[in-house]
Image (cartoon, rainbow, N blue to C red; front, side):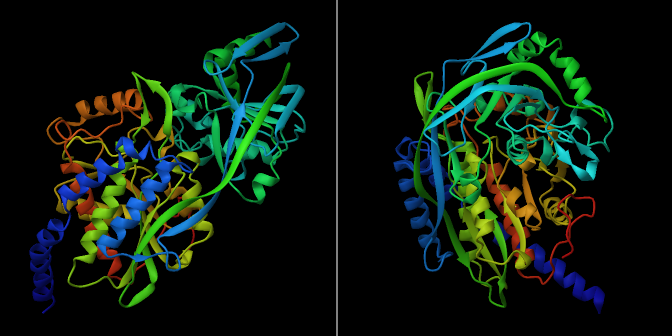
Length: 536
């Protein structure tokens, strides 16, 4: 009897799956991308006319799809933001016992002040080299141990010690950990009482080139308008180029490579660079509300339990022109992923049998500004964390056509990996790890606040093995994308050139996976080796 039941289930699955796949509408995906990446939305920057137009379009689409408002009768969740614009000097002069060096704004240093003060001054602030600026008890590592840095400015390296060694068990080897991310380093320096924090940029260790950290002429930064911002201690945040750091270190009797080697070894002790600097920064700011956008399909049996589909709507707005174009349209980042989420939502509303669990389609703001919209949702959730089954996030989708792979960025954290692999196999695809875990993408996208809240999350997509091109050629295209398209005005969708079949197939994949979990009672479990592990 069991054999016949199993056979019947397989036959039913084979019959139903094509119908599910057909509910993903490629033509609508393209229409959404064309609107969201159009010049009329002005690069979708928060707190601009671009936001007003973007969220209005998303509200319209959610109503058309048939989603219920997620936030007490509204499709919008207010996200209180402060937009700080810092006017900084043309150069930073550093004085050492062996002479002085001038560090030029934009080309060698990108700095700003994370303070709600009009005039911010630092006078003869001492520079202290604090290695990677990490305090990680579980790794028996504290770069700040025994150090009083009140009034001083710390100089820290990007990434973490594991990146520079061959031991995969040491800070997860080449994979960047949470401690390697720049927001952590600024936050830890602030918690330690530092007057400032300067991170040395190195492209391979950071995972992105200098233009990504250069804030441009506008030099604006977004923050959540909360108590933490009011209590901010550090007056200066900055990135310093590798070459400029080498000049600074040389005046202190060291080299960049020497300090990297020292800081990567257990037992490293921070030390003064015997250097000081003074600077004055003028801040102006705008206090306003941005908006997360969300729609819900309420579950028929367990509406208090939910899966979250997520893709941020914001991008970089209007910025420095490149080849005469100043609108950063963000087609791959992240118009395509928003279209992905909307297509899945539409698919669920067209199913004859509605899901037993609820589905939240969350389109957050301010992802490009340290995941602020996602963090605000997690701090103010619609569904309890303990009742949130999983989060599926999507970001940076390339228009290359179909893929053989499903790359999981952050492989090994939960059972979701296994469930995804089973669904991918039905498409004739395989799952694999991110080829560049050292760039920390797992900690750079909106699933991070969910992970920290104990909610298993997936960030996965076709990425490294385009079907016709093969893996090697695809990886070369990826390398070119990160150098020449990512966060640049050239991030366009061109219908005559680009192919959406891979995006469609990814939407079908996560539609299947979500439908499976939405009609189950099971809560996916964490891997005990994950730093986010909690009992579920």
